[in-house]
Image (cartoon, rainbow, N blue to C red):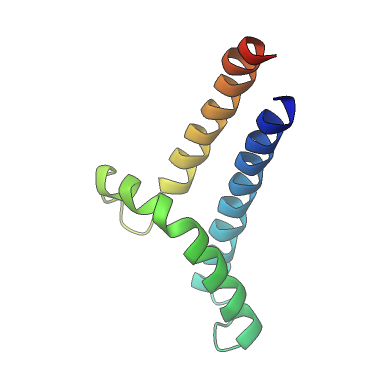
Length: 96
């Protein structure tokens, strides 16, 4: 059972890193530092957008429009960290 809890915690941690990479990549593209006409940049950006967008879309519906500032990755990271803490402090002691 420890392996399942470890796997869930690792998956949550990897998704948090994917959110951070996606946000940084989005900022770099919007400021023109990276060019999406480059096939590699486009492929990496598309991968991270497809990976993170389904989770971010519902959060964006509830957040107010702040212009060019998107706080949905921050909100999702906080929710995922809360899930990791809940998993390690509440669920893990019960099953182990």
